[in-house]
Amino acid sequence: MQTLDIKSFQDNLKDIKSVVILMPENPSLDTVAGATSLMLALQEAGKETTIAAPSPMIVEFNRLVGVQKVTDSIDNKNLTISFEEYDATSVERVSYNIENGKFMLVISPKAGTTPPNKDQVIVGYRGVAGELVIVVGAASRDSLGKFAKNEELFNQNTRVAVVGNAPVQNFTQSLELINPQASSISEVVHDILESASLNVTPDIATNLFMGLRAGSDNFQKGITAETFTRASRLLSSGARLEPVTVVNPSPSPTPVVQNTPAEWTQEPRVYKGTTLP
Image (tube, rainbow, N blue to C red; front, side, top):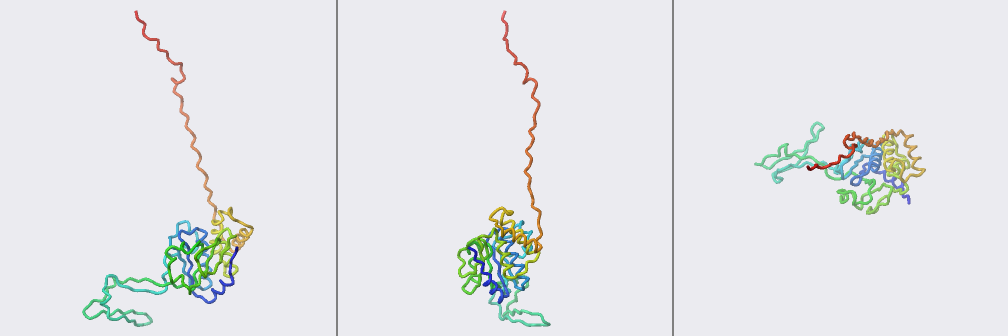
């Protein structure tokens, strides 16, 4: 049963500024194509967007526009500064100044102690900057790996949308954008973008076309008339076609016929023995 609640999705987009897009462990090309297309469309709509997966991207995905922005970390909200191998009790005071428009953090050590040196400074991020979490291609929350137990992502105040072409589990109180009749996740994403009036650029169309082709096994699996209609619309939106690589089987080696030794075809020699006197 199709459950594309586009109206609720549009309502959620209206009043948010930041989005986190998550993929499961070891995502397919179709999943990555759909997720990166959502990222590109939401960025064009002015949303601050983070896209992440718990496992690294493989070389095959490098054809997709925006795949280089996929990260394995979603901590991007608060800048943190810490000091490696420095006694925290040596700090007397932490303050800041604004000088000539520049922010300056000041670490004041206690009397008789030395300040941390610059080689001990560690800069990082903590916290998730995402008012809406969009999960693409995950069968369950557990398939999100290390992200599954992140309480900042999944709590009672988090707005979560799940995108896919198969039923999902363990996503409570989520907005489902699911169409089991679609041959690929990229088909579902295309429907979402068009229905939500988000722009489908040539880069987005190219990603979705590649995902649609991969998800349908080159238009051989689970296809309907709608599959070809969507493919046609993607081409009209500027999708760039990639040549299909056909791998020809290696020719069988020709057996080498060796010449038969002449003695093999001669009459057998008969041993007559020795004549005794």
